[in-house]
Image (cartoon, rainbow, N blue to C red; front, top):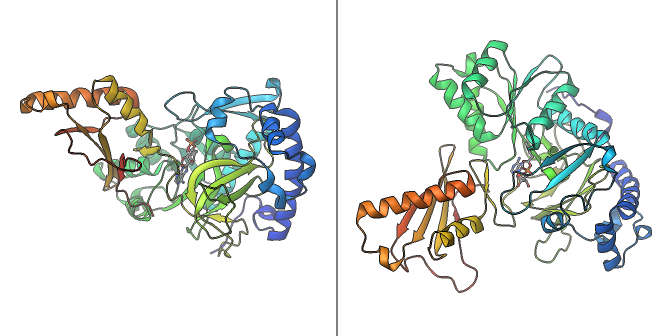
Length: 435
Ligand code: DLL
C-alpha cells in the first residue's frame, strides 16, 4: 500500500537521529522550565538536579516527575512558563471532582499540536480532497479543536459538527459525502446504529475512514465499527496535559500508535517505584513535552498503562509505538465516555445516609457500557416493601446522576452482603475486556 506522510522527514527519520533531536530539545526545554516555572524549579532543587546535569535524553531519569496532584496544586497558573500575553488559548480536562486541570497554549503550541493531528489524518489516508467531519466535542475538551486544526492543515473540507445532534450529523454526512469521521469510538458506534436504522448500508455510507480515540476501546469494537460503517477505523491517543489528541496515532498497520516523539519523549516506568523500565515492558506511560512553550510538562505521569515498541512498522514510520492503553493506575473509570471516580459514588452514598459499602460493576454489552452500583441497604431499610426499595434505588441513582452526569442502575442489596476486604477494598469490577 502506498504510504502518505504529512511530515515525511520526521516521521521516517532514523532512530539515532530522532534521539539526537530529542536530546537537543530536552536540554533547551529543561532550561526554559527551570527559568520560568518556579514550581518545577523547586522540585528540581529539592532533588539536587540543575539544568546543567541534563546533557541529553540519557539524563532524563534525573528529573523529577509531575503528577496530576502537582497540576491541581499549581492550579491555575503555577505551571505556566510564558507570560499570559503570549498565550492564545486554554483547554481543560473533562475532570469531575475538585479542581480541573487547565492547560495553556501559545500560537506555536497550537501549530505543533495541529501538525500532530494532521499526521494522524494523513496516516489514516486523508488528503486535501477529503471531507472531514469532526464530531468530537468542541470547547474546553481538546478533541474537537485538535482534529479541527489538523483537518485544516491537511486541507480537508472541515465539518465542525461537535458531538451530539445525531440526526444532523447523519444529514451532513450523507448530503455532503463526508469521507472521514472523527469522534469517540462509542459515538461512532452510535452513529453507525442510527445510520442502520435509517436504512443505510456500508455501501452507501460515504465514509472511508474514522479517527477514534479519547477512551479505551477493544479490537472487537473496532471491527464492529469498520463493518457497520464500511471504513477503516484508526486509533488516536492524547491527553489535555500534553496538548490533546495526536500525541500518538495509528497507521495502516493498525497495530499500536506511533508517538510523535519529535515533540513528546515517552518513558515507561514502574508505577510503584518510579523506576524506568526497558522497552517492551508494561508500565505507566510518562511524557516529556519537548517543544511546548506555555505548558511544558516534564516527566508527566499519565497513569495510562501500556507498552512501547520500536519494532519495524510496515508503514515506514520510525516513530516509536505505544500499545493501546491497558488501563490506568488510578481508579478513574471512563464509562460511556464520562470520567467516573469511585470516590464520587462514595460521596453520594455518604450524603444520602448510606454506609460506604458498595461495588461498581462496569461491563460492555454490544458496544455500550453498562454501569451498575450495588449498595448495601441500612438495616432499617431491610424490611421495606419492594416498591419502597425501588424508589430508594431510584433516588440514589438520580443523586449519582447529579454528581456524575450519567445514571447507574443502583441495586440495594442486604446488609453485609458485599465482601469485606482485608487489604484494599475492591470497589470496582470492570468486566470490559480491554487487554
Ligand atoms: O481524551 C484527548 C483526546 C481527544 C484523545 C480525542 C483522542 C481523541 P483527556 O480528556 O485529557 O484528553 O483524557 C486523556 O483519555 O490519559 C487516556 O486514559 C484516555 N485516552 C485518550 N485516548 C485514548 C485511546 C483526551 N486512544 C485520557 N485509547 C488518557 C484509550 C485513551 N484511552
